[in-house]
Image 1 (cartoon, rainbow, N blue to C red):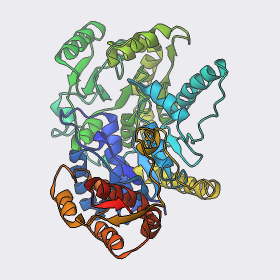
Image 2 (image 1 turned 180 degrees about the vertical axis):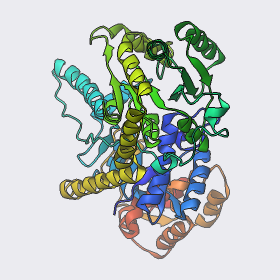
Image 3 (image 1 turned 180 degrees about the horizontal axis):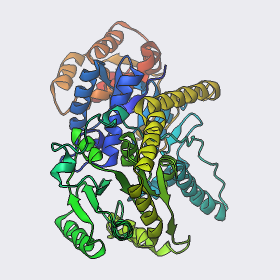
Length: 542
């Protein structure tokens, strides 16, 4: 079994400001599901965030799995798993340990953001291998990644350059949810104690839910939703209540959104529930008849809330957009409504404006969203059809629940990851056997190679070495001074240093090359420790 070393970033810890993004839910859910369903003998990980370390300790204790934080690339066991697009540095770092030492996996959550195109450029130049993978959460996002790669390779070809395609794989594995958490409760959803009753939504009204970030610039512009629900209210004659659960990025956005709602959907009853988590999410889904998400934003690549809604037994009205079309089956689990985007070539100024700097990330997203439209008539027809037919709602909701359990439950998703890790390990063993030797890493070079011309003399590793007659006093000075042993983590430890001094004390004809052979895997530390002793004057050339 392959159990990767997890490289965790800040997305695993609870956000300090309480603003939960999909990436937080996905990362936290993955780690919990990995511990529950993969059942590793130990949890090997690496992070530079103390709050992540604390949260991971709690999760490992819950699952009763011991944890080990690795210190070096050599400590990675067969596979490294990143919860973002792996930095090119990760591949260069592995090269120093041997390209076939382990596989590298990463999963993208968004394909926009500052520096991402440069990040993809760096991946093209990085020493990726066929046993590496950038996991895409949908077919649309995989296609977008491949177009980014093509953009760079086309540029190099135009300059007469020849560069092979990246060797890593681009498999599609969706994000997951714990579907049992959202399984419809067997209780009266119209009960006085329920959220629906608390909000004053009568049984004959159609309750439509949107759950997510209430951000017009980076999630979904609300105008098509407002317009479609207003038309559906008029066409059907049935009361419609819109529940919006989530947080606004600012009071100004909240006020502007409320003003637009009053103008575009005055006859719809609006409820802002705020951000919900835990059991509160289940209560919100239970209060609704229909789930709606009309994203028009290139930042969105998957849409976890659609899966949550399906697991809750709700029919979904969603835009036919990126990963949404991998989630919702049109006419079966809900309705997908058409979207239209400006053609390629019309967005060059958008890219250039972002490249000049000083343009906020969300504004760049909105630059693209402004030229993306949603078919409001199609949304209206879908809402009217679902509002008029409770049997249709029930049938689509049940189909969605079955689909969520079959394709998006964490148990299924973790199994897909384990299958991928095993496949990559087979590739590594079959194709990487002749590519396992450690080589210099040009991104993180050996300073003694790059700057070898700085010193006036080159050291002969075959030269005889001896201890200085006053070596004890000089050694005590070195070990006692914080500024002489300030960087001791890359030298031999206390036991190793004692063995080194003992070898020099007892031996005749001792050389640096001989000591490195004697110390085996610690040859580098041995050489550096010898030169540290020479710096102290405790060791000298005979």
